Image 1 (tube, rainbow, N blue to C red):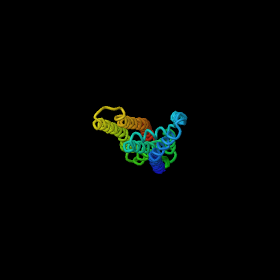
Image 2 (image 1 turned 90 degrees about the horizontal axis):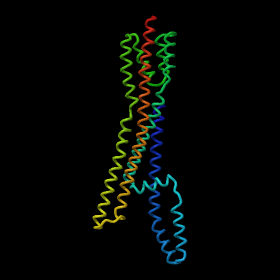
Image 3 (image 1 turned 180 degrees about the vertical axis):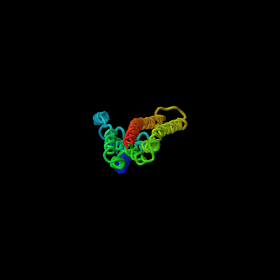
Image 4 (image 1 turned 90 degrees about the vertical axis):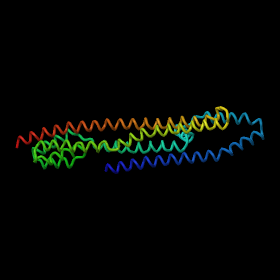
Length: 278
């Protein structure tokens, strides 16, 4: 079930990213196709009737001042920033969020009520012995129940062996909890780097335009500088979003690990008392 949730989360994020990229490509193509007809129409109207020019200009100003939606504004900036580098930044966001969602689902499923589980194990030990307690662990989900089962399975070998088994298997479960965090940290570092690369390339294009023109002109360097700034902002936004999820996951893992350690100590106390009663 956990793998199913993770698979659905990854597929959903990839589908959303592919749909966004396709929509942006279609909007860019439509804008390029309609740009020349719009200019020709404007020239024809101006030549035919000079008195209609003020009205047309007023209409254009009103349309330009009309507020755009956030989604359209983001898509416009995405296209202006350059499809190549912005696509890489978007992919870093998609894959990073997919891993974050999978980890959040896994950690939420790994969280258990340890007090209730310990009470059930203690009652099972008093009523049915070690095998009944092991059955309770088998029917419970989460890493804490798995650690308890490994300890109970070696109860006949002594408390010292049980303690070593609990510690060793706790390290294994901690590794499973931290799985995927390395990839998230990679995307956090990669997104700003891609943005900075776009910045450097944009500045190079701006200086190339200055060199070709032989003079400094605002229109010559504005395009390259815009690409540089937009890619940088995009990379930083992606890094900030993923950093928030990363810190949440780290805090969630720390809470589960602390619960595991505390519950393991309580389990050893319960087993010592049970062994003394025998």
